[in-house]
Amino acid sequence: MELVKRVGVAFLLIPIAFGMAYFGGWVMVVFVAIMAGAIQRELLRMFRCGFEFVIFAVLFGAVSPIVIYIWGEGAFLPILLLLSLISGILAVTNSTTDSFRSFTTTIFSVTFAALPLITLVLIREGYIWAENNLLAMYVFVYIWAGVWFTDSGAYFAGRLFGKHPLAPKISPKKTIEGSIGGVVVVLIWYIFAAMPFDLPFALHDRIALGLIVGVLSQVGDLAASLAKRTANVKDSGKLLPGHGGALDRFDSTIFALPGVYLYFVVTGFLKLF
Image (tube, rainbow, N blue to C red; front, side, top):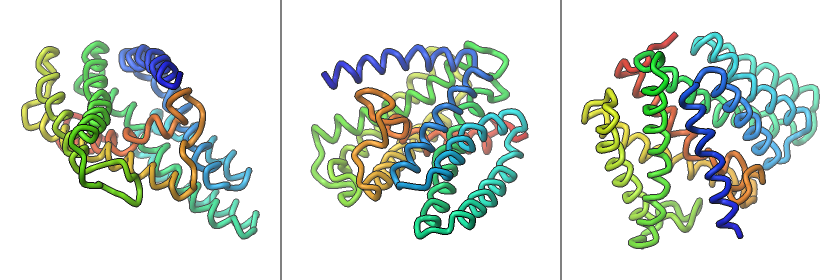
């Protein structure tokens, strides 16, 4: 029954992902805003933060991607300053023993999840491919699928060859062999999947993307596991049947795509501001 739920949700999400990737713009921004707000809610509820902090974090997490989309990356610093100021005011005006935890969790949740998720939109709107919806869709799916291939490669390699724990205190089932398998599989994907669609990435770009996504997607997964273990919960929520919450579904993406975004900025595939 659980497998049926997972497959059903996957079949629902796949066309949504392709639709977002093709149309980009506000279609993707709205989706990211919804997911960011959902993750904010899950994180603050996991750590039992005050109601005022939950409401603020959800609204702030949902609005931040919209603001950055409208004003560009230059809005990042004002957003962070506003986040710190308002969170501090809430902590002082709700001076209970839990206020500091709620204050720090709010800042952590936005910088850990909501702001990194906007890189989904920034990558899709990259200036080299932004005017060609079909090419932009190929690039976006090519990049995002790498996260899935890393997860799948690590899972199957771990099942077949796993012997040495990767991070036993955070996620006991993950192994070094599985982690290496995930990186190998995603490297194969990035090196060969770019060829049929004539994507504008040289061999060194594909290798770099494979290493970035292969490593950072696993770091994001472990970071989310650490947060859940600290909060003593198994799943972050129940938003997606068979998959858990929004954080459970996007944990690998949260670190991987910002890494790709930074690589694209450094190499000139994306322009700041």
